[in-house]
Length: 300
Ligand code: 0GY
Image (cartoon, rainbow, N blue to C red; front, top):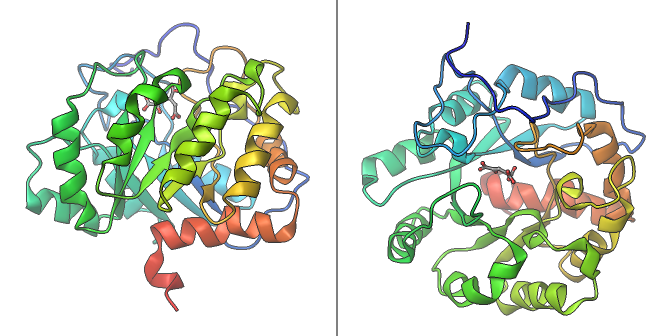
């Protein structure tokens, strides 16, 4: 029996998601997903704020194939802390079809950073979501950002919309490209043309190397499945304004989902609603993530 028992109230990921109606273009990348454990092999971090259900690399590959995707970008979740072993193991067994975003601490050595790079890591994640992490030291983060920038990596930032006003200057001062998780977690009740979302769009416009994941309708929506219609205007606005800087991902296995069990087939069918043309879909699913995570394969 596993030494880890998942938190109550959690939804285990969908055992048999629908086949999406939307066919993703060849070479599509799921640019935001996780692997969790399995806890018996890759233990969850002692200081974690939640204990997930296991979500193994084999299960992730099965989902990738079912949805018609080719590659994955696996993002380190807080339940594994700065122990990137599960992430590296998944990438090592992906036959070159996965890359990753790690979590590191200030004391990470150059050799370790090189090992992560060789293992397929191309970014670090700074998480500011209060229910997930204790407050991080900005000096430590700036120091890490400066070191990883020299490897050609970027910083993935996850924050709550209301915090952007306070955090924006800090983010804009970081010396590495930025990738924002989940459209900066907008409050959908305020609308895609609200001052809150205008502020996010202004943040995106402030530098040309800020990217956005137009992800997580399942987390953001008040309306819920199957269409998540209230999130469409947000995704559409970002995709139309920044077609060359958007990414999409499933967020499998959907940590901390309590309202419903997302069906990834339905999530894939959300894509053409926010990226209605073949060109936008190709940017979002192939060209952009390839440029960011597999640049050596796309260099002219
Ligand atoms: C996500 C979402 C969440 C969790 C984490 O690092 C994490 O623990 O990413 C969340 O609970 O919102 O997939 O980015």
